Image (cartoon, rainbow, N blue to C red; front, side, top):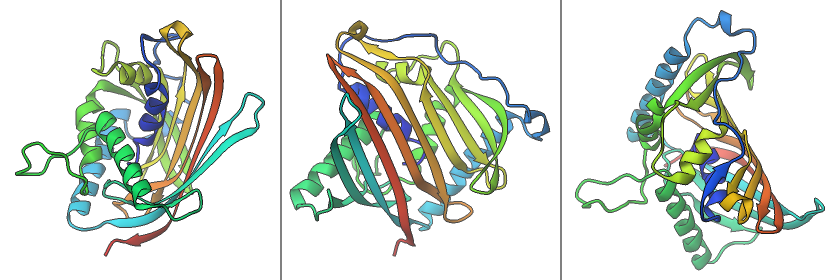
Length: 288
């Protein structure tokens, strides 16, 4: 699911709201470069093309059987209007680098029941299908599969990549490795079919760091540029949303989520909310 968490988290927040969705500002456009972009030997378009090639190489490696499993620990904290913790949820999943649905291992520190495992599976699968699409296996007549999906990211790039404008910001180091820093924003005039997806993507400042050597995504940051409203703010308001995801290098072709941290704040009807999401991955092992 690497690179897609920011979509899932942001859209999940807004999915609870219904009615007309609007934003309190103009759509995002290119940010100013950070001063060292002139020393970059490649253009934003060339870097993006090499990233796409790296993702296709990753997919081929996965299809050839190079798959890792790892432990993902998640904390979801809800805060009240005074900033005090109102609710804390923890989940531990067995996750996989081939994008199959992760398996719930611990729920709030306890071994889950079979019903809880199945419910979590359905919940994750439903979100994947709604916002990321699904693969279809030959001979299934269009039926969805819960098996591995090595080309999930490749399909997303092919479907949406040409609708975003890459913009070079400069260079930075990510976990000791040099990386190209780019911004991606929706090209003027582009409209996405789903109204929630369309609204969110037009008003997110999306920054990505591409590893200079292997052209893998090493870091992603997405932040809401303008508040979002449901029914003019009567039903709900998303005031703040930001997610930062840092990737973990496992091989030269396989990178996956290392840490993901996100926070959203706003209001549903008259009730304010602040939610913090934290995910830390560990115990990486080749899948046998």
